[in-house]
Length: 291
Image 1 (cartoon, rainbow, N blue to C red):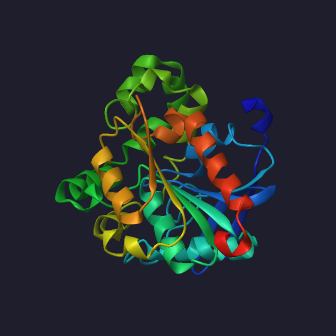
Image 2 (cartoon, rainbow, N blue to C red; image 1 turned 60 degrees about the vertical axis):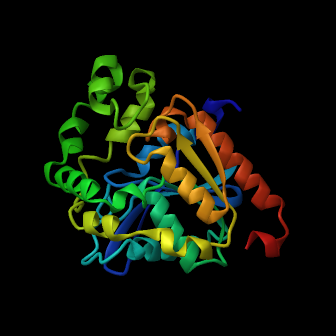
C-alpha cells in the first residue's frame, strides 16, 4: 500500500462527556471502526506514523485519553475503568460500533476494559505491548510516579524538531526504554511521539490507577478475538508479559524482531499490516461472530 495515499488529514472533534472534555480525531470510512488508544503519557498523535500506513478508506477514531493531550482530566480516577467508560460513550456518540479496539501500553488495559464493558460492540482487540503485568510492581510505581512529577516529555517536546533531525538526540530520548533502534525512527514518528507531551494536565492520578489495574484475573472472560503485537526487545513490557497474555486470552502473538516498546512508531508498517488483517477478518465474519 502506498503510505502517501493514506495520509489524508483526520478531523478534530471535541466532545463533552461526564465531567470531561475529550479531544479526538476522526476519519470517516468503510468497514469496522479502528479505535487507536495511546498509552501513559502519550496522546493520539502517537499513532501518526502508523495511520499513514493504513488503508485510507478505513474508518478511524483516535482519542486523547482524559488528562492527556488536549483532553481534560477526570475529577477522580479510582481505576482505568472510567477511561473505558468515556471511550464507550464517545463511540456511542459517533455510532462507531462494531469496533476493532487497538491499545498501546496502558491503552491496552483501557481497551481490555472496553471489551469487558461492551462485549456487544468490540468485535476484536489488538494489544500492542500492553501494560498490566509488570506495571503492577513497586518498581513500575516508582518509575511512573517520577515520570508524572518530572514530566520529562514536556521539556523535550519543545525541541522535538531537533530530536526528529538528530540521530544522537533520538538515541538519548528513546534509547533502551522505547526503541531498539532510535536513529531509525522517522521524523514523523518522533513528532507524533512528542507532540502531545507538553499538553498533559493530569498524569499523577493515572499512576495509582494504572499500577492497581491488574487485568489478569478476568482475562478469561474476554470473548472477542485478540491479537497481541510485541517488540522482541521491549524493556518496559517484556515478551514474557506477552506470553502471559497470550495464554490467558488464548490469543495469537506476533513478535516483531529488532523492535522495542514503541513498536507502533518504530515499525508502523508491520503494525498497520496486522491491523488491516484483523479488520478484514471482522468485516468478513457473520454478524453474530463479529459482535
